[in-house]
Amino acid sequence: MLRDDAEIERLRAMTPAERIRLAMQLSDAEIRSGRAEIAREHPEWDERRVAMEWAKIHYGESVYELIDRMILAEYGESGSRVAPPSQTDSVASKVQE
Image (tube, rainbow, N blue to C red; front, top):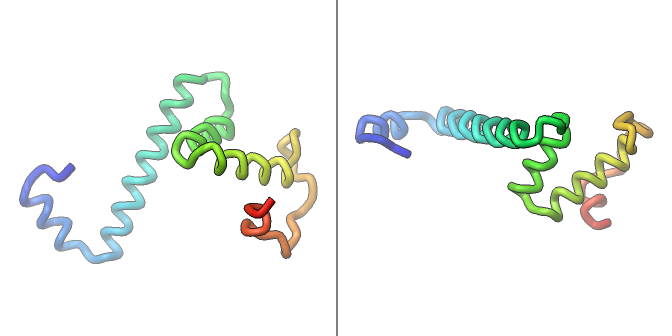
């Protein structure tokens, strides 16, 4: 939240690139904070599981399932890459599955 007129003026004085950089930094901080909270609630989960749960909460079940299928297709249950991805594979083709 903006606290005062001086802060508003500082934001207005920023270049578009500076505003984008600030927005990305704030977004990154929020993502890290959310993942840290999930990790505290589930200390038994690894980093990948925490990230997937965060995605499920913020992007919804359908996106979560799509990402999970893509990871399993590429890495398998073991987490090791099954085969190098084909150059003809694309996110769009995976979305259509």
